[in-house]
Image (cartoon, rainbow, N blue to C red; front, top):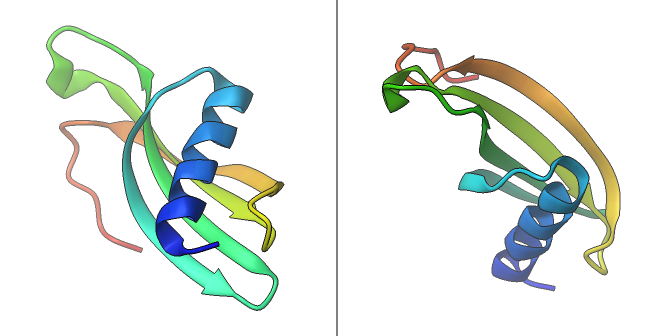
Length: 85
C-alpha cells in the first residue's frame, strides 16, 4: 500500500465512523506497522462558514489499510488562528 492508497483508506474509514466528510489530508506518516493519517473534517457547519467548527482526526491503519485506531486530536473554529503542533 502506498501513501495515496493509505490516505484514501483513512478518509473512507473516518467517514464510516463519523459520517463526516474529510476537508483535507493534513498529515501522512509510514511506520513499520502501518500508516498514520491526519485528517481535517467539518464537525459543525455554521453561517458564515468562517465560523464552522473543524476537527483534526488521527487515523491509524495497518499495512493492509485496515483500521487499527482513530482519535480526535483537536477541535477548533475555522476562522481561529492556531499554532502547528
